Image (cartoon, rainbow, N blue to C red):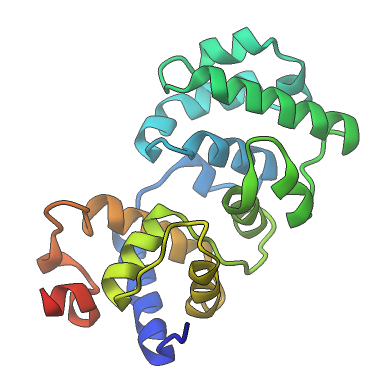
Length: 215
């Protein structure tokens, strides 16, 4: 699918400018530590950033290395995540992933997209997020927030975040794929481009948004 290059460039700039003034601050956004970023991204799956922020600090202090998390009893991890939901599923994924990291990769978070993607509970998006946010690799990221914003602004229609056409579109749209671009999209969807009752009058993209200008 083709991307309007000039529009994409304008959208990227406006999203990042807006983020610079309005973006939220979370601890996993102020670090390049691949361990902390991997933990955060695994927790953020199917959960809001606000909810994760309430448990992240205490969790990362208690389990402050991959080895410590790998050695923790699953029931201990469940207890630490009890207020977040899906704690049993998350605990199993943490145990499996970090036991593998400790055994096969000497307790170091792999700097390989293919290896990260293969870890239990990780997959394409989280692997890409770690490569982007921790290791500075300019790789595209596609999740529900990105799909939602791009479908409105560009009038795209993708099946979901697993749609290969969506990843191809974002790879062309994202430019240098700065972290601030993706954080800006996440925060715009959370605060302005709401799925119900979007706040289009204060959106930095309303002027170029297909959905807003054709509704």
